[in-house]
Length: 176
Image 1 (spheres, one colour):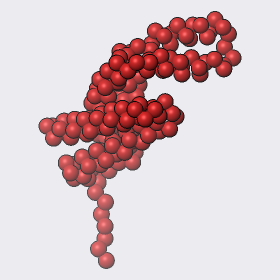
Image 2 (cartoon, one colour; image 1 turned 45 degrees about the vertical axis):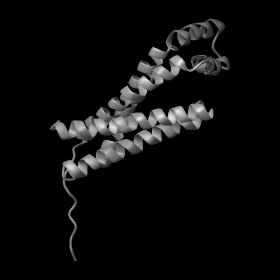
Image 3 (cartoon, helix red, strand yellow; image 1 turned 90 degrees about the horizontal axis):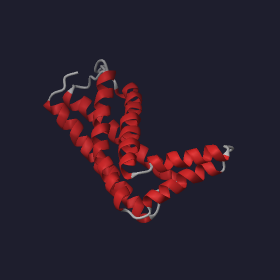
Image 4 (cartoon, helix red, strand yellow; image 1 turned 135 degrees about the vertical axis):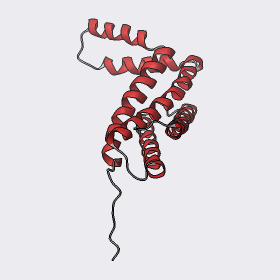
């Protein structure tokens, strides 16, 4: 794969668009009070998939004459996801740090999910200690948003999109 100035510009542009879109969507959901509804996860994933699909397909058609390898799809999708993850992580850090009660609500939801389980009291106490340790603005922004959501999630989505978007040769159509 040739990583040239056009490729960097393309991946960073779509990463910026995706990162800002995710941040604006999350801010809007927070203001409307629907951020913690299960459907929001699906909306975030849908936005990421659609943006990656459009960005990689556009790059394939405009810069590579319709021919792209599986690895190129993967690397391009990963770079777009990672650059979007940087922007979204910065937004989330400030959101978690400066929105009163947001960290407490996240912790409450985590602990609520374990309260109905069959774990022993000792196991539940250990989970609560670990949850409190990992529910800080920095940890949530870096570990949850950047690494888990955008790098690992973006990698998986890029692998799947590689199957859909790769083309070894331009399709030939017969003129009858």
